[in-house]
Structures are given as C-alpha cells and as structure tokens.
Image (cartoon, rainbow, N blue to C red; front, side):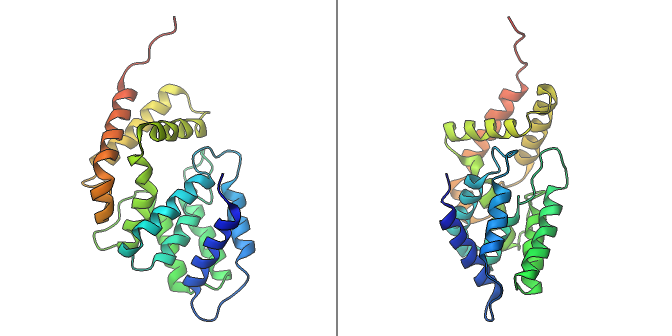
Length: 220
C-alpha cells in the first residue's frame, strides 16, 4: 500500500515548485482530496499504486521535461476523476485541476499546462516538441513494459474495473485499444522510454492482443 504521508509530501513539493515565489494555501487539504479520490472503491488499477508508479517514472524521466513539477501535478490529476462507465474522465479531471490549482496559487500559465497534459492522456500522442507531454505519457504507459506477472496483474485489474461490461464487448474494445497503441510509430517518446520500455511493451501488447483474438472455449 502506498505511504500516504510520503505522497502528501511529494504533492506539496510539486505544488510549491509550480507555485514559485509567494507561496499560497496549505497544500495538505488539496493532497488529501486527491488521495481520497485515488482510493475510491471502483478503482482496481487506477489506484494509489498506479499514481505512485507514474510519479516514480516522472522522476526517472524528469531531465526530458521542460517543467517537471507541472508534469508531476498532471500525474496527480490525470485520473483524479475516474468512473469506468463514463467517457469524459480526462476532461473532468482537467477541469478539477484548473479549479484546484488556481485556488492553490499556481500561476495561470502553469495551471493551463497541467490541464492540457491531463487532456493529452486521452490519446497518449504528444507532439514531437512537447517535452512535458512526452514525459507524462511515457510515465503513464510504462506499465505496458512490465514483467509478465505484473503485466498479467495489470490486465486483470483493468478487467475488474470494467466488470459490468460483457466479456465479448470488453474483448472487442480492449483489442481496439491495443491495435491503436500498436499502430503508433512509437509507444514511448523520450529516449529513456524508447530504449528501456518500447520493445517489451510491444511484446506484451501483441501477446495480449493474440490472446484476446483467440475464441473463448465453450463451457464443458
């Protein structure tokens, strides 16, 4: 389980870095609100463990970002609103970021950048010159390069979040997502991601797609 005290401190550092001189309100209530959202019962993959993993990967990739603290805040907000049966989660998360960060004293330009990055996670397809977007998207997608057992746990958790979707519908939808990802020229845009994650992620995606494309066996 993620250490919430450590996460609160990480949020405070990112918020203070993004606010710059002058400060603002106490970061703790904002951190606690977000932590409560990431603990909601409908989440099985999009949990505090996922948030922590994304933040860790942003730390790994921070040299490739133009504004690492803004990317860290975008990681905090990118799935802050998450209802599996809704299609506008990213937009609602971005609007939450706009409201909260403005109130918390983050300058308008940086608040807008956080919201833009959150919206970018709809496609995970940043522009070639979008260094902040490349870091956030790579950090979010790095789970695709997990070892076999961790990848299997990831796919099982995603399926559990969509437990209300019939199997055939889920398989078709998930296969479409995998094909779209495999169709990208690069899954990862940072040099680190391309070197360390790209090949393994594509191997995992192709394996999952092959499994989803295999007709289910009828019950005995």
